[in-house]
Image 1: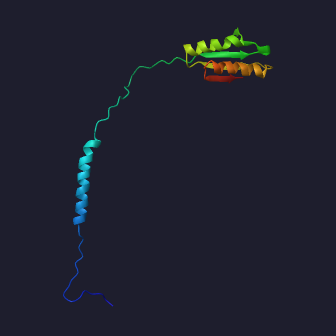
Image 2: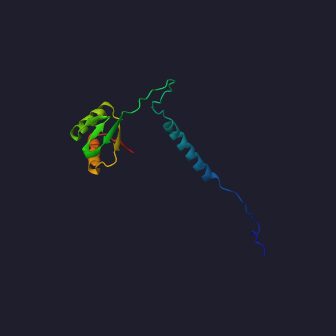
Image 3: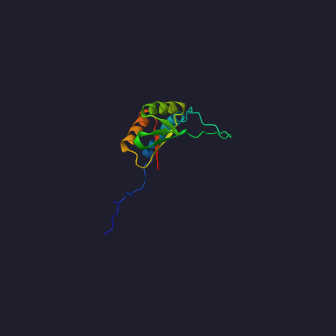
Length: 132
């Protein structure tokens, strides 16, 4: 059983490319119109390379020791809990990167340590390190 065309007619296998050309021309026009809009310069300020080394100062380190019976020392100077906050605020204002290292001696009251940490947090110091 073979399929054949009726007598006198021959089938031609052609691809109608007219719609394809129309679509391609429309896309070409769209790209030609939008390309100049996309190539606008962007105003940026790029960092410039410097050959010199920038010296960074290390942060101000303070050592707070909590002793027995509520004895506090800040950088080996005895302080009271009432004056601790103002001293830490002054240190934070002079150097915002101040690091407070807190050390408690064996046998120190936990409440005394918590009170010292509360004063440190109230002073605005955000870098607090516990030492052994």
